[in-house]
Image (cartoon, one colour):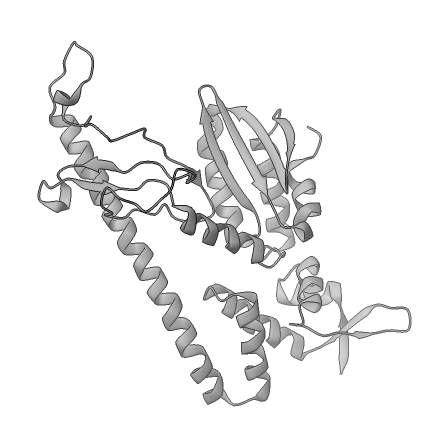
Length: 297
């Protein structure tokens, strides 16, 4: 029995109407049509959306959710359980690997800070005698991205990255949890990791999980954070130049935005007194990007 229009289903489920339309186009949600062309939904749509929402919180990709919904529709709970277990196990392994990388990176940074604090203050220029500048260390570069956690690894001097790689050179760090032994920490992802990150935002569903009130509140915060920005077009996105003192506010918003709208890709570049914020989205999300970031101040 169909009894709800899209606005009513959005209110009942807490899922924005834009997301409901996207789910329909992706084959996750079906709707009947009135003679006038209005979408009509049955009561089962509420349960279906709750199931989809739970699957999203587990970090499942849209394609996986579609497969899982098909199993759920068959009605056998044991089949859903059997299908879901390996998917959750895979996500858990990924999360644990990232947590281990982040823990190693944190320990290396603490060791570097402790070593730096122990060095004497010298009036002369920094040189290898300082202890934190060593031959072959190369330039230090950190790429601040909201698309995912910073990856750190104890790679050797040969990272396997060619001259065309955007990753920074390994930075030797002493002390910390490694018993005083130097550890090469790669601060920026290599080409393979960067490609995987790019693929995540490109293949993410163009949908927002925020309710209407949350969407209005988030939009207002973005408008305030980027007020007065200088804007320029980029392939698939937009570049906004802001005062550097807004970096904390912008980074916090970008991280929050990825929780509800993972199809946005954010890159922050600190350039002296300026912060350059680059925002990209797949073609289907271009209109949402424009509405949120390309509005007149």
